[in-house]
Amino acid sequence: MTEIPKSHPRYASLVARERVAEGVRKGLTSSQGLIAQGRGECFDYLLGERTTPSAAAATQAAAAMLLLADRPALSVNGNVAALVPEEMVALACALAAPLEVNLFHRSEERVKRIADLLRDYGAERVIGENPDATIPGLDHARALATRGGIYDADVVLIPLEDGDRCEALVAMGKKVIAIDLNPLSRTARRATVSIVDNILRAAPNLTAQAKQLSSMRHENLERIVQEYDNESMLHRAVQEMMTHLQGQFQDYHSAPKD
Ligand code: ATP
Image (cartoon, protein in one colour):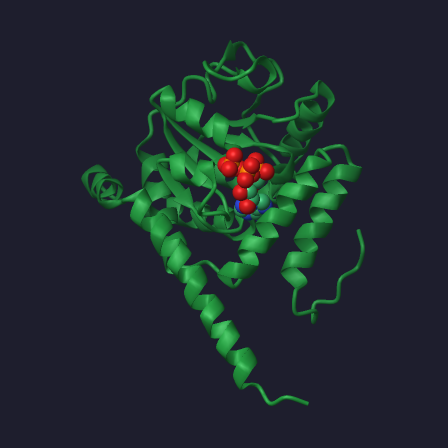
């Protein structure tokens, strides 16, 4: 990977870009994944590249929902595998949940590479290589799912997912948790809980929350979930972006000109 100096003001963003490019070179990520990364970077820039209060609240609700689940499942695609493989394994371990490789542009070779990578990081249950069910309402390749994983899960985490699949999972009656930097995407608007944050920050934050809430009584976890309102959280995320941008704009205009 290209060496990026830690002093660079956009260090984290450039490292992420390098990881996705490396994911393409290693055959983990499709070339379309580079475009998804670019879109994500743009929204992260608008957010100020930080976990906002609304994202922290959504992360807490997501952790509570996953802890209450009877059959949670975590979806991993090519961008997720390139960016946070180790962090997804840590999350799966904290929740005792399976990781299911689930690709938009599916190839058996890429599924196997990603599954092997997750196993190399110590994942205990990785599925998706032998799908045995289909999600209704999607065309064949995109509908593939696995029993014991996403297909019969009650709560599914779908980081960086497309809107159609999110909608189809919600239509199956599942609770769906999205991680998506775009608060206006169909995925973010259709999901039950949308974490508007970079997966680089959201995945470790979610694991930390799951560990922190793991000893909480069920009725308290249920209260967190009941009090959560996704629509107003997305509204807050948009407000946070606008406030950040106004601040940037004012700083720019008040800075001394050469
Ligand atoms: P939708 O169908 O939901 O409207 P889309 O077509 O806009 O989605 P896709 O290309 O299918 O988007 O999925 C990529 C999504 O993932 C985008 O919304 C993008 O902002 C988001 N994204 C990309 N990189 C990251 C990241 N590192 N962390 C979180 N979200 C990301």
